[in-house]
Amino acid sequence: MIDYKKVDFAKILKRYDVESQNETTPEAVAKKMLPSDPVLKEVAECVLYMKFKEVGPVTTKALSSKQPLDIINNGLVVGMECVAKLYAEHIYYLPEIMMAAKTMEIGIAIAEKQIPGGRETKATIVMHAAEGDPHDIGKNIAAVMLRSSGYTVIDMGKDVAVVDVVAKVEEVKPLMVTGTALMTTTMTAFPRAAEKLVADGVNIPFMAAGGAVNRDFAESFPLGIYSEKAPQTPPIADKVLAGYDWKRVRDEWDQIVGGEE
Ligand code: B12
Image (cartoon, rainbow, N blue to C red; front, side, top):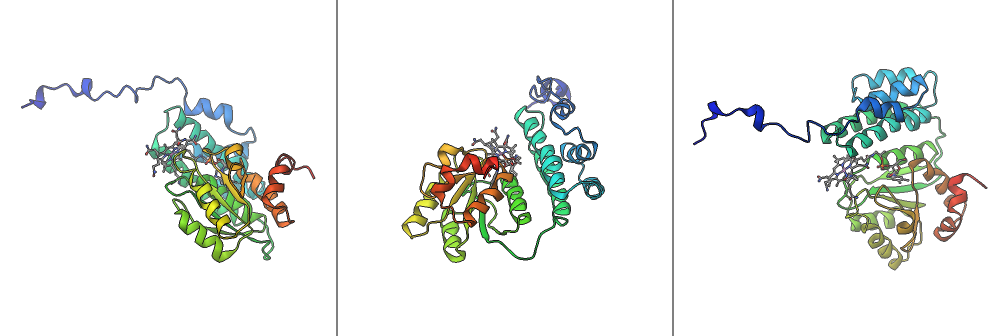
């Protein structure tokens, strides 16, 4: 039997990974990555420091001088990018990630309501995160971008089974379908879904996105097209709406995302 009274827990409960060997701090990352504009910086800091009670009032205040999409892309999302960097550096851990993501979502929900947009929808787009993949923050941002550009988004959520994606696409017949994968173990869901769609006679673009995939992978299976960053999605969708098929999107991808005609 261990006599717990004689044990010096200070020696045992010392986790060397918590007593960080990394010199980086959230402040140092903030200095490098946060925007210099004071309004956007304050918004981004809410996410970075997980100020979920303050993000609402700060976002509302920012809306008096900034466009909603500016606040989302250059404030809230930048804050989340800092958080991802801190996670990669083992300074932030999962609880911080979850709280920061929630904080960002509160801000996005407020800013999103102020995005001007007509009532008419350009077309419907089906979005999902790959089967087995719980990462949906990037997808949610891309969904905001598409909605704000006039598209109707059917967001199937995260960890969506291939069979459900195929069934939804065949039911709704959208302009295109997007899939997000942040894990190398889940990205193979996209070719499986695309191949089933092709076998069923569906010929719409299947946009593969998220940190696990790159352009080579996205263009390695039928229907597949790539989007690296959420803001690239509306210009690509506009070209599909204008009649580009998935092969032409691939051919002209650089010009499309670069914004050239
Ligand atoms: C947040 C996060 C989580 C959260 C997800 C919360 C959520 N609701 O999304 C939680 C805590 C749930 C999580 C869990 C796990 N995670 Co995680 N997670 C992350 C983290 C830190 C940040 C991702 C993020 O949201 N970034 C912010 C957003 C804005 O960036 P983004 O997603 O990259 O999106 C940008 C682009 O990719 C693109 N984009 C993304 N999606 C889309 C969609 C469309 C349509 C378009 C156009 C663009 C687009 O646009 C965005 C920018 O504009 C990453 C590390 C990293 N650096 O990426 C790891 C990371 C993705 N996770 C990882 C892992 C391994 C896991 C776990 C398996 C860990 C574990 N051992 O338990 C589990 C999953 C378990 C399971 N199967 O359920 C690995 C994946 C490794 C790999 N290559 O396979 C990473 C890379 C961490 C690492 N370095 O190891 N995670």
